[in-house]
Length: 81
Image (cartoon, rainbow, N blue to C red; front, side, top):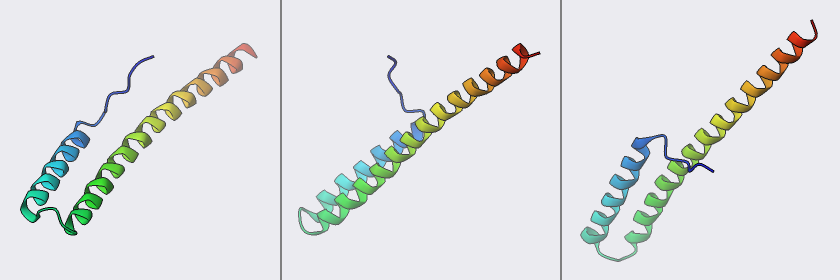
C-alpha cells in the first residue's frame, strides 16, 4: 500500500505560516480570552486545507475509475464487432 503524499506543497506552507502567526499572537497577547479566537482561526484554516486535500484525492480516484469504465466500454464494443 502506498502512502499518500501531499500533492500541494503550498498547503504545507499555509499550515506553517498560520501556525507561526498563531504562536506569535499567543506570545503577543498572552494566554487570555483572545487565545480562543486565535485557536479557532488556526483550526478553521487547517480544516479547509485538509478538506481540499481530501477532495483532491477523491477526484483522483474518480478519474481513475472513469478511465477504467471507458476502457471496459471500449473493449466490450470492440469485442462485439
